[in-house]
Length: 212
Image (cartoon, rainbow, N blue to C red):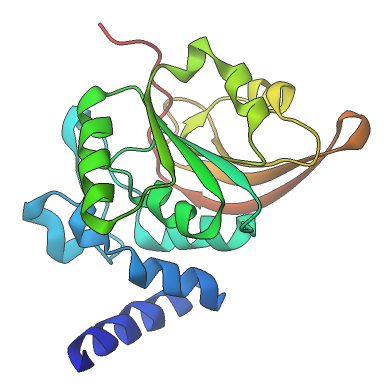
């Protein structure tokens, strides 16, 4: 128990260096053990600023980026959430500890299957996993209070058009070949009004459109 507490303190102190200070978010980051979701060869890099490689030339978001997203979205236990590009399921699992229910969407079936196993190992049961190309069904996000995208798109228009009133979305935007993308929160209010807040800049992969 003492060793676990020491490990949690180390993780929390690392996160605080990025101004992640919400205790609920810090507790979730420690509770959902990222090393379980990382490929075995990279378990020791789980809480670092290293982008852990995955199959299909994809990468996990770094822990500080995940923490910044979780804190900025201000997720409540009454919220329903959808995570687009759910990958290993780590971020979706963190969101599931803060929200009422979560849908995790990814285009790769092996990511979805691995995510299910990871969540079963931790006893997380409020996530619905769906293997699909979100480009075919953007209207799906209308059903959720919280939308989190882990990939980048050139324009947030498609997300804004499909958000419901009083929902919030985190989205990365930028040119496909640009190395750095801008992460922002979009809030949709009554009468189709929007507010936009820049949160972070980082390197993320662009959206995938279909599989060969």
